[in-house]
Length: 411
Image: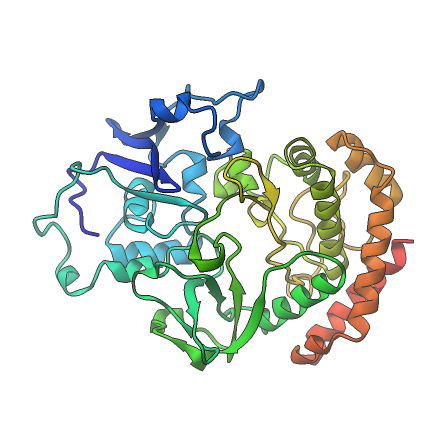
């Protein structure tokens, strides 16, 4: 999509194909989001985010403008770090100008949202782009528009088992996670940990380890050392590709992506789940949290926990994702958020679990049993996990030490 930035002042926000609001660009480089009145009046309206839910259950509509960036919920839809810079460069957009980045990337966002220039607000541009821009199809940008720090691509599975990055990035039902240029065997690591999680009783999406040569249309800028990538089925897409709305917990708490390690704890997440999704969701959350400590996954920040809205209104906990044993890469690392007053990855204690429950204001009695069962199942499954054979010996030995060591503390 081409647009003239000088004329672009409003972005339409569509949820399940329905326009529910507008992001307006104001004087002084400020942005404000406003709901459409018919969405406000609709008692059966689809949920956009729990961050817009008031204390009495109503919709929060008194929203304030924010400088330079877009409001937190929308900021979290955009990529981070090097991926953002890469996409912004392709689109000839300043990576810090989130309003314009949303205009370019808004056709392929997580969940059931589509964000695009308001009809009639910005016409086809008159050549206000850098030389050579006309020779590059703007649709190529959209194929790389999923949020996340690690480079991911929307893709469709071919009958041959390979993966193709679709033109425009539309309709993809898989995400391809490429090797890391910094750390060894990250796709193999996550592939093994996802299978271990499944055997420990955790719900995870379908996934497959694939050869890099099977990925077509991959730009040279995206290639990194390593021969394999991880393909994960998108859980925000139903059968046939229909979108399922979702939000991560940075969005739930109204925090910007750069605050995903700050201001909240795992107890805060559990408290929301207890109130909004119920006891089973809390049990599954605790199972995943314990599993993350057991494998030494220090990176379970707010954006690595998400809610889905399969009925468009009531949230459920999404399948688990981003399970990577990070401790072998970053020695002496600690948990992304506080867990019962501790960030330690070396043990889990009954006292820690009680403090976690007290802070979350949830019953403590079933939690320790969940912790023990999860640790025992993970340790037992690890001993016979054939996917572990894919890991380098030193990485496997480090993970083995972590799993068996932490599991021994949870009894």
